[in-house]
Length: 288
Image 1: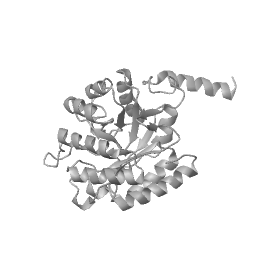
Image 2: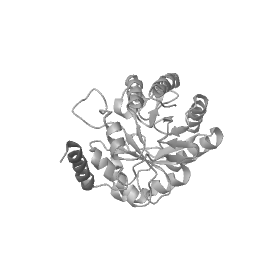
Image 3: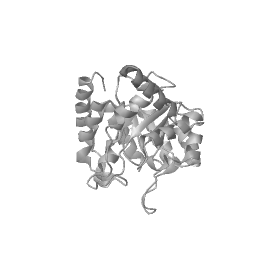
Image 4: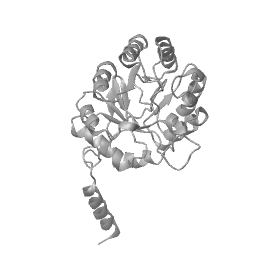
């Protein structure tokens, strides 16, 4: 047997052993493009999603949405439901927060991505938002993933705190197996022995997952960094590595944020990052 033949045989054996089917390139060799309104994840354009970690007030969200419209960010992020490590931390405004986000969409033309934390919140998020986010803590909440598969909305699926790539793709398989192939994968950093950053951004996950799966991959440099000063360099690296989008925390006044203020960019820094990311996207044959 030639070396070429041996390689092809080995690749066939590995493919047969993959525990995920619908999200793999064996099922769908071409890149999937996930369309949400006028936005396309997985196309030649890198999609930027940005906004505050949590919905805190109507004024905060409207100010954020107005700025996102001004600089050309098409998707506003903001948590109406906030799963927090401490039970005493701000937990979000729930349905009232979703209504504020929907008002911002109507007023400023931005799409909305926000997190669902359980079945009850999933029903509300699916009603009010454009993209349902499943956070790192719920990546292996399999009953919730099944429900997301039936909710009829695109999903942003974050990688778990200590999940392997195979486990992450198996989580996506749960969603796909229950009827929803409109999945956007999000690398947000994993827990390692390093303590200087909040998490360790796995840049290698971008090309690896894009080889294994047809789904688009975005990165969250904010939760990986934990400090706003490191967000832009990680974001630039993600675009260079081939990420299909960025989701970045930005706040009108990070010092007063009720959630994740230290890792949130102010609006000036976000605008600077947009320019830098655009230059890198152009260098790798894409646009912003």
